[in-house]
Length: 239
Image 1 (cartoon, one colour):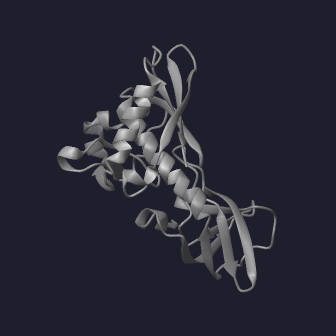
Image 2 (cartoon, helix red, strand yellow):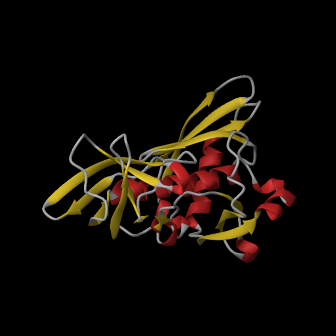
């Protein structure tokens, strides 16, 4: 398995890694990486690998076999050989915007306390699809409530529970279409707020900001009807 350095420190922008494999499709597997692989609605990270006098742009990152994380070059190129030690550098601005949007979407699910049927994260905006038979009564009120939560600058932290504890607390899972991975013995939770000020706790494998204030200003964009019961709510980073 690839060691997931992005879990240990989502703010790490550079790190050393060693090539342990090349995939038949031209991907690179490192022993440890700061690059987040596509999953849970969050895009895979991009950046650059450096070794000797070479630089290889990475377009995206995906999950491979057996817990491997595969870095996908932006274009066909000579790959660093197995056992090569190299420096990995993240496209930090893009990743950080993903982190801000992702945490904002968790808060959106607090402001709109309905089951979530889908979602996606981008660097400029994100969206959640809700099981929402009736239209939002007041979009501006939702935006104001979401911004108020962000401005409280609540701490964002992780916790872990066992598969059995999650099974005993099914209300922790807000997503209808994507279930948290089970079978590893434990499930990662993202907690927003602490103690009496806790506002959200749900399973999530993605990267998040350390405090909600880092999200900054947001605005609610389109609210679109998607089927008989589903409505898509889009939020945008204002800066």
